[in-house]
Image (cartoon, rainbow, N blue to C red):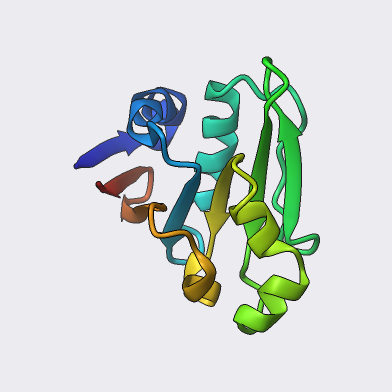
Length: 137
C-alpha cells in the first residue's frame, strides 16, 4: 500500500495512515536523512490525540507522550545507536515490548530486537515538497 502526499497535506496523510496501524504496536519507519520521518511522526502523534510537544529524540533516544485517552506513545530515534546491545541497554527493547504504540525512526540500527508483528513503513522523498509512504502489511 502507498500513500503519496505533499508536505502541506501531511496531517491528512497521517490521518489516512492511522487505520493501517490496526493492532500493531510497533511502527518501524525507514527513510533517508531528511525524508521527513520526524515530521511525519509529529503529524501522526497529533492525529492520535497527543497534546504534548513532540520533538526528535535523537539525543534522548526515547520520548514518551500521552494521547487524549491517557495511553502512552513512545517515539524512538535509533540513529545514534551502534548495535542491538546498546539499544537494549538504552531501554529500547523494553519500550518495543511494552504493549504501547512505538513509532521508531532508524529501526535498521537494531532490527533483531523488533517484535515479529512490527509494521514496517518506508518514507521516500519524491520531490522537494512531496513524499511517498510505502506500507508493508
